[in-house]
Amino acid sequence: MLMRPTYALIDLSNLKYNYLNIRRRVKSSKIMAVVKADAYGHGVKQVCNALNALKDKPEYYGVATADEGAELRKNRTKQPVLVFEPVLSEEAEVIVKNKLIATVFDLRHLDILKKAMKGRERADIHIKIDTGMNRLGINYNYAADFIKEVKKNNSFNIDGIYTHFATSDEKDKSFAILQLERFTSVISKLRSEGINYGTAHCANSGAILDLPGSYIDMVRPGISLYGYYPSLETTESIKLKPVMSLFSVVNSVKEIGRGESVSYGRRFTAAEKTKIAAVPIGYADGFRRDLTNKASAIINNTYYCQAGTVTMDRIMFNIGLENKIRIGDKVILLGSIKDKKIDAWDWSRLLNTIPYEITCGISKRVPRIYK
Image (cartoon, rainbow, N blue to C red):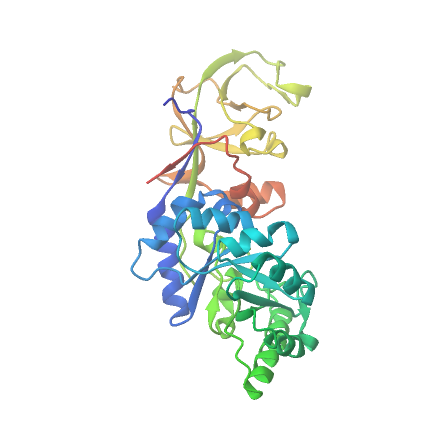
């Protein structure tokens, strides 16, 4: 089978390194490995297989949608799988059929699930509590009463409760601490009344790094599994290695004169005679158009600047005249060699975004190679 010269290399040993470092950090707390969005673009099947090959494998997995959960079951993932999105009637049967854990924070969610169960055994659910994110969940002030109401319905087992931090990746942790206090107040109330709420969890990557008091029963690493800190404001209390690298090749080199332009819109004009190397990757692959005239690549252990508008399938680099770059030479777009490195934070700074968007944005058109 022929493969494109542009590909993403997924280093599963780095994935395991990150996971085991997180495991050491959180000690006895369980881990829910977050593998939504095709494991943040890394390939959910291969990521789950690698983590499940470890002796100390994740206790849970987390996904965004029911279809993502069904994909894990198809891959014979045995652990409990939590679907973060609130249950919809269109997805309820998939949740029930695949024995996924539904997120619930409204009594109508139970009605939807009950119809899909069709008299089958009890379904596991996790109740989401809104402590200040104001996106999804039952308000923390009403959470304990809601949980008591749900407990009356024997068709459902409350396997866990959870919340999500809005600012755990920021230097100022005051709001995250307030959210944690709100969440633990619900836990305390439930405990005082002898109500079993299952497994409590709230720590995302930022909280795992900086708020050990938030570990409670389980943590939910996402971007940290794949080798990136969630922001530039967290500590680096856990050592991480990027899991994804992105490579291509030079597939044409041409010389242009002073004053000649490159690509659509003539957004690059040569200040002097130079050579332009074309590389077969573009915005359809996840090399964003906003990187035009901003990004760099490593070719033959030297940084070169991208030149001219990024196109759907191709980008160009100004390589000057004094070099020995040839067709077929390797191009490092994300990755490292010797003392040179480009990572998703370099792109993020140029695009005013975060590494999550970079790795998720490397499209399916780019083959993944696993090592």
